[in-house]
Length: 262
Image 1 (cartoon, rainbow, N blue to C red):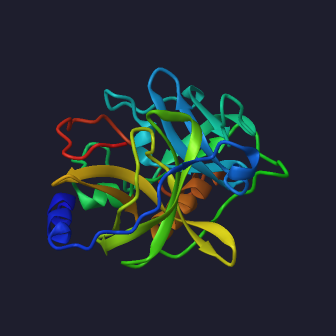
Image 2: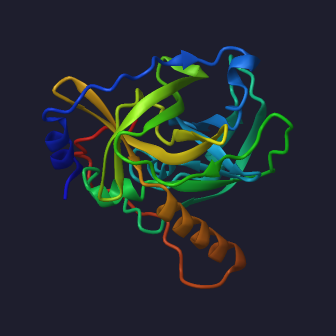
Image 3: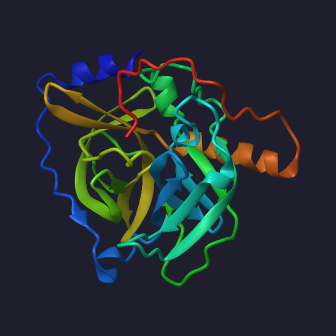
């Protein structure tokens, strides 16, 4: 099944979400609790957004690991700037290792739900982040249709500070993909999608793509829990040097994507 077909079906007669506006996290007080989200700079390419999930691991979208010609980017071209705000980060780290989900196929068309569903990656930082203001985020169960969620992201024209959208909506879940009404832009790939549980933000999805259908913007993310568990297992296997061979990507041959990777 194609994502395009899902979206067109869902938008027919869909109710408008009462989403909150994007708010720039301009001060330390505004940013409290969101310092674990950072801009993931990619030398000679641009940036994505990533979030801390362990003291030495960040989570982002798998397609952020690939160059414009489809080749895998070297880890030394990545820099994670946690809590970046007006040129200053709460913590800055290089990257020593990268790993996309083993079932992510960067050669496949980006309209395939299977590509979006596995569009996650983890990057190992060269040094752990242990800072009294920066804490890793826990992972929560995949949200249901109609649930309210939030997104913290960097993006084009708002690259120097994160923006928070406290409320947007899950439009639908299908085929391992979450369709959302959240406001994203170029640079928002890999942005963590949050729910608040017991007073704390927990990650429920990662932004993979965006689409504009009949003037309505849709953001598309992963159903995170199961793919992330698989990815972390693969990462552990790689760390111990046991188990199956790990494939982390290849040369991209498709350049006619109908969806934009933000």
